[in-house]
Figure 1: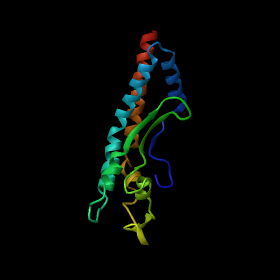
Figure 2: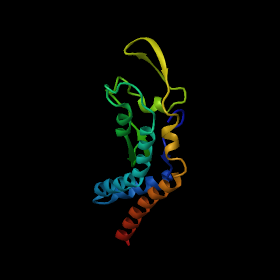
Figure 3: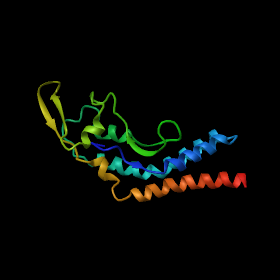
Figure 4: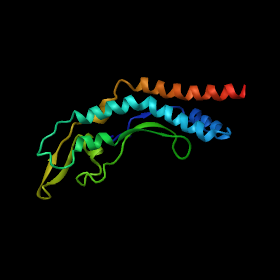
Length: 167
């Protein structure tokens, strides 16, 4: 997430786009697309859990009166699937944390090696704070093949289902 795009399962776009087109051609295509997206999200849920545990493992200090930063970030991590349009694919995304201490980019900044700057209690001086470096990037390291295979399996199941209908 720092200088790289978020964790992304790369499924051949041609295959995914062809499957999305085939689903659109079916009479109940909308329902089938919804089911495919749901199955792909289900395949990525364990990766989201790993990312959530990565941020929850970040050290915490302070009085704890403000909204909890780590749990707010963890709530915003979820699988995202898009079929068709400008971008087709499946990925784990850490969405912005609006209304949490005025720190909308918390997932991105806490993952960054150089950390972030903020005022102390809203006043001078500015301080540099560091989170847990690469908590998002390293959380799913080594398991990407498993998640890629799970997404491929969800796609293949839907393709088989469509082929069985046609055959």
